[in-house]
Length: 231
Ligand code: DU
Ligand code: SF4
Figure 1 (spheres, rainbow, N blue to C red):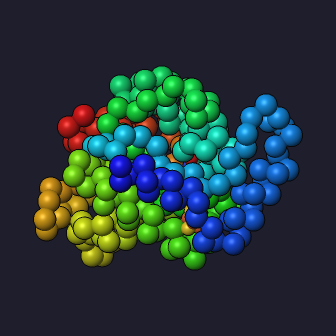
Figure 2 (figure 1 turned 90 degrees about the horizontal axis):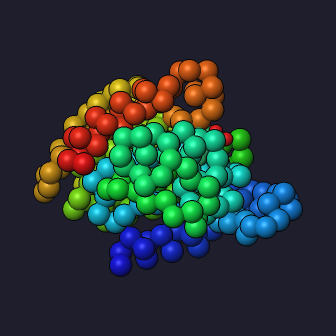
């Protein structure tokens, strides 16, 4: 199957030397703290069904979250916030996301990122962002038959995702739409249905601990986008 194959290819990618070194070093040095688990330490593919109607695009895996568990937003504080909200609005089977074997299922939603490897200080370089874009483009192309809406978490994801949507076949307006919480743009496509793009502040602790992004704000954007996507 197309998306499963793409996920396996992503997991084997070694295109960014700095990120390969970092993800493996974190896995090596932190493994002892999680001695009962295997530490993933590789690129983290997207998570969710291949016929998703809604795609959620973050930033990059967290060093001790996705980089440890091998699943997007799984095992980190950002993911706790995101998956609880997805559960609250009926898009996930359970409110928690602890490890790749916890039984979590997403309903019509695919969670992915423009950078698939954990970066030092959660900051990919522009070169790393550009190197990883083809993976997102391929994922969006495979999702195109069903995907009708996207929620982009944070300005980095927004900047990175717009060119990927353009390469995957949607028309991105010029000048490029500006990121903001609640930003909404319809992306037309010459040969298919449009896609509703929704901006949302990132679910990182920096935003959720300070109240810049509340659970209610997150649920509102998810509900709006899910409804627009026919979920
Ligand atoms: O807040 P935290 O769980 O420690 O995550 C750190 C950092 O990574 C934050 O900016 C969110 C981001 N992130 C992400 O974009 N995607 C993920 O799957 C996990 C974390
Ligand atoms: Fe490959 Fe993307 Fe990881 Fe770079 S960030 S090594 S392009 S998967």
